[in-house]
Image (cartoon, rainbow, N blue to C red; front, side, top):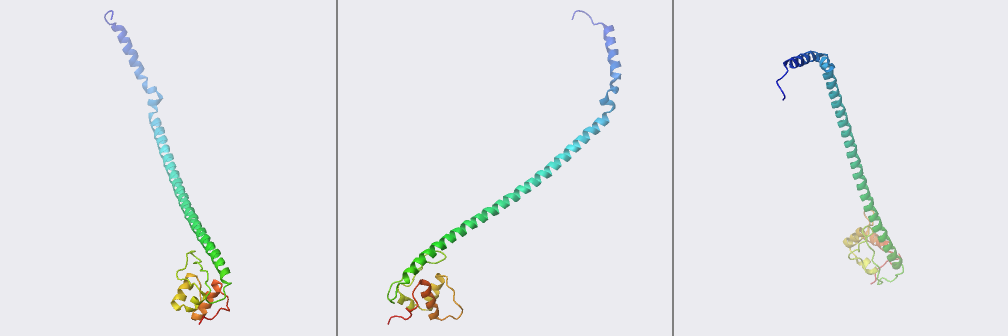
Length: 185
Protein backbone atom coordinates (compact mmCIF):
# COMPACT_ATOMS: atom_id res chain seq x y z
CA UNK A 1 0.00 0.00 0.00
CA UNK A 2 2.10 2.73 -1.31
CA UNK A 3 -0.37 5.45 -1.77
CA UNK A 4 -3.98 6.38 -2.33
CA UNK A 5 -6.08 4.52 -4.89
CA UNK A 6 -6.14 5.65 -8.50
CA UNK A 7 -9.83 6.26 -9.15
CA UNK A 8 -9.30 6.67 -12.81
CA UNK A 9 -7.88 3.15 -13.06
CA UNK A 10 -10.66 1.91 -10.82
CA UNK A 11 -13.29 3.55 -13.03
CA UNK A 12 -11.75 2.01 -16.14
CA UNK A 13 -11.72 -1.40 -14.48
CA UNK A 14 -15.40 -1.13 -13.54
CA UNK A 15 -16.26 0.10 -17.01
CA UNK A 16 -14.37 -2.86 -18.58
CA UNK A 17 -16.06 -5.28 -16.15
CA UNK A 18 -19.48 -3.88 -17.06
CA UNK A 19 -18.74 -4.25 -20.75
CA UNK A 20 -17.65 -7.86 -20.27
CA UNK A 21 -20.63 -8.66 -18.03
CA UNK A 22 -22.91 -7.42 -20.78
CA UNK A 23 -21.33 -10.06 -23.06
CA UNK A 24 -22.22 -12.96 -20.70
CA UNK A 25 -25.47 -13.72 -22.56
CA UNK A 26 -23.30 -14.53 -25.58
CA UNK A 27 -21.91 -17.63 -23.79
CA UNK A 28 -23.39 -20.85 -25.28
CA UNK A 29 -24.19 -22.25 -21.85
CA UNK A 30 -26.32 -19.25 -21.02
CA UNK A 31 -27.87 -18.68 -24.45
CA UNK A 32 -28.59 -22.37 -24.98
CA UNK A 33 -29.01 -23.36 -21.33
CA UNK A 34 -32.40 -24.93 -21.96
CA UNK A 35 -30.81 -27.16 -24.61
CA UNK A 36 -28.07 -28.22 -22.19
CA UNK A 37 -30.66 -28.85 -19.51
CA UNK A 38 -32.74 -30.93 -21.93
CA UNK A 39 -29.60 -32.83 -22.94
CA UNK A 40 -28.79 -33.53 -19.28
CA UNK A 41 -32.36 -34.67 -18.67
CA UNK A 42 -32.16 -36.98 -21.72
CA UNK A 43 -28.90 -38.43 -20.43
CA UNK A 44 -30.42 -38.94 -16.99
CA UNK A 45 -33.50 -40.64 -18.50
CA UNK A 46 -31.32 -42.90 -20.68
CA UNK A 47 -29.17 -43.83 -17.70
CA UNK A 48 -32.28 -44.60 -15.64
CA UNK A 49 -33.63 -46.78 -18.46
CA UNK A 50 -30.28 -48.53 -18.84
CA UNK A 51 -30.14 -49.21 -15.10
CA UNK A 52 -33.70 -50.55 -15.22
CA UNK A 53 -32.76 -52.87 -18.11
CA UNK A 54 -29.68 -54.00 -16.20
CA UNK A 55 -31.82 -54.66 -13.13
CA UNK A 56 -34.16 -56.78 -15.29
CA UNK A 57 -31.22 -58.70 -16.74
CA UNK A 58 -29.79 -59.31 -13.28
CA UNK A 59 -33.22 -60.48 -12.10
CA UNK A 60 -33.37 -62.94 -15.01
CA UNK A 61 -29.85 -64.12 -14.22
CA UNK A 62 -30.87 -64.60 -10.58
CA UNK A 63 -33.87 -66.65 -11.74
CA UNK A 64 -31.62 -68.77 -13.95
CA UNK A 65 -29.24 -69.38 -11.06
CA UNK A 66 -32.19 -70.31 -8.86
CA UNK A 67 -33.31 -72.85 -11.48
CA UNK A 68 -29.75 -74.16 -11.74
CA UNK A 69 -29.66 -74.53 -7.95
CA UNK A 70 -32.98 -76.42 -8.09
CA UNK A 71 -31.61 -78.67 -10.83
CA UNK A 72 -28.48 -79.38 -8.81
CA UNK A 73 -30.64 -80.16 -5.78
CA UNK A 74 -32.62 -82.65 -7.88
CA UNK A 75 -29.38 -84.16 -9.19
CA UNK A 76 -28.15 -84.48 -5.59
CA UNK A 77 -31.43 -86.17 -4.63
CA UNK A 78 -31.12 -88.52 -7.60
CA UNK A 79 -27.55 -89.37 -6.68
CA UNK A 80 -28.67 -90.06 -3.12
CA UNK A 81 -31.40 -92.35 -4.44
CA UNK A 82 -28.94 -94.11 -6.74
CA UNK A 83 -26.53 -94.49 -3.84
CA UNK A 84 -29.32 -95.91 -1.69
CA UNK A 85 -30.43 -98.26 -4.48
CA UNK A 86 -26.85 -99.42 -4.97
CA UNK A 87 -26.65 -100.08 -1.24
CA UNK A 88 -29.91 -102.03 -1.41
CA UNK A 89 -28.66 -103.93 -4.45
CA UNK A 90 -25.41 -104.71 -2.68
CA UNK A 91 -27.37 -105.97 0.33
CA UNK A 92 -29.56 -108.13 -1.90
CA UNK A 93 -26.55 -109.55 -3.73
CA UNK A 94 -24.89 -110.39 -0.43
CA UNK A 95 -28.12 -112.02 0.79
CA UNK A 96 -28.42 -113.94 -2.48
CA UNK A 97 -24.83 -115.17 -2.16
CA UNK A 98 -25.35 -116.27 1.45
CA UNK A 99 -28.62 -118.00 0.57
CA UNK A 100 -27.00 -119.75 -2.44
CA UNK A 101 -24.30 -121.17 -0.17
CA UNK A 102 -26.92 -122.33 2.36
CA UNK A 103 -29.08 -123.90 -0.39
CA UNK A 104 -26.04 -125.63 -1.83
CA UNK A 105 -25.36 -127.20 1.56
CA UNK A 106 -29.02 -127.96 2.30
CA UNK A 107 -29.41 -129.93 -0.95
CA UNK A 108 -27.09 -132.58 0.48
CA UNK A 109 -29.25 -133.25 3.54
CA UNK A 110 -31.57 -136.20 3.22
CA UNK A 111 -32.63 -137.21 6.71
CA UNK A 112 -35.48 -135.36 8.36
CA UNK A 113 -33.33 -134.88 11.45
CA UNK A 114 -30.51 -133.23 9.49
CA UNK A 115 -29.87 -129.63 10.43
CA UNK A 116 -30.39 -127.13 7.67
CA UNK A 117 -28.33 -124.00 7.20
CA UNK A 118 -30.56 -120.98 7.79
CA UNK A 119 -31.19 -118.50 5.02
CA UNK A 120 -31.20 -114.73 5.47
CA UNK A 121 -33.87 -112.25 4.49
CA UNK A 122 -33.29 -111.70 0.74
CA UNK A 123 -34.09 -107.98 0.98
CA UNK A 124 -32.23 -107.01 4.16
CA UNK A 125 -29.64 -109.78 4.57
CA UNK A 126 -30.78 -110.01 8.21
CA UNK A 127 -30.95 -113.41 9.92
CA UNK A 128 -34.48 -114.79 9.97
CA UNK A 129 -35.71 -115.31 13.53
CA UNK A 130 -37.03 -118.79 14.39
CA UNK A 131 -35.70 -120.30 11.16
CA UNK A 132 -36.30 -124.07 11.29
CA UNK A 133 -33.14 -125.88 12.40
CA UNK A 134 -34.03 -129.27 10.93
CA UNK A 135 -36.08 -130.56 8.03
CA UNK A 136 -38.47 -132.06 10.55
CA UNK A 137 -39.03 -128.57 12.05
CA UNK A 138 -40.45 -127.49 8.70
CA UNK A 139 -43.04 -130.25 8.90
CA UNK A 140 -43.99 -129.19 12.45
CA UNK A 141 -44.64 -125.51 11.63
CA UNK A 142 -48.20 -124.26 11.99
CA UNK A 143 -49.92 -121.89 9.53
CA UNK A 144 -48.80 -118.72 11.32
CA UNK A 145 -45.15 -119.85 11.53
CA UNK A 146 -45.23 -120.91 7.88
CA UNK A 147 -46.71 -117.60 6.72
CA UNK A 148 -44.18 -115.66 8.83
CA UNK A 149 -41.27 -117.61 7.36
CA UNK A 150 -42.60 -117.13 3.83
CA UNK A 151 -42.89 -113.41 4.44
CA UNK A 152 -39.30 -113.25 5.75
CA UNK A 153 -38.12 -115.19 2.69
CA UNK A 154 -40.16 -112.85 0.45
CA UNK A 155 -42.05 -115.84 -1.00
CA UNK A 156 -45.46 -115.42 -2.59
CA UNK A 157 -48.14 -118.06 -2.94
CA UNK A 158 -51.41 -118.15 -4.76
CA UNK A 159 -54.57 -117.50 -2.81
CA UNK A 160 -55.89 -120.66 -1.21
CA UNK A 161 -52.53 -122.48 -1.17
CA UNK A 162 -52.64 -125.22 1.43
CA UNK A 163 -50.29 -125.42 4.40
CA UNK A 164 -48.63 -128.46 2.81
CA UNK A 165 -48.16 -126.50 -0.43
CA UNK A 166 -46.55 -123.61 1.43
CA UNK A 167 -44.20 -125.98 3.27
CA UNK A 168 -43.25 -127.64 -0.03
CA UNK A 169 -42.44 -124.20 -1.45
CA UNK A 170 -40.30 -123.39 1.61
CA UNK A 171 -38.41 -126.69 1.37
CA UNK A 172 -37.73 -126.14 -2.32
CA UNK A 173 -36.62 -122.54 -1.69
CA UNK A 174 -34.14 -123.47 1.06
CA UNK A 175 -32.72 -126.32 -1.03
CA UNK A 176 -34.20 -129.42 0.63
CA UNK A 177 -34.75 -132.21 -1.88
CA UNK A 178 -38.33 -133.02 -2.71
CA UNK A 179 -38.05 -136.69 -1.74
CA UNK A 180 -37.79 -135.64 1.90
CA UNK A 181 -41.50 -135.10 2.10
CA UNK A 182 -42.84 -136.73 5.22
CA UNK A 183 -42.19 -135.94 8.85
CA UNK A 184 -40.35 -138.44 10.99
CA UNK A 185 -42.63 -140.34 13.30
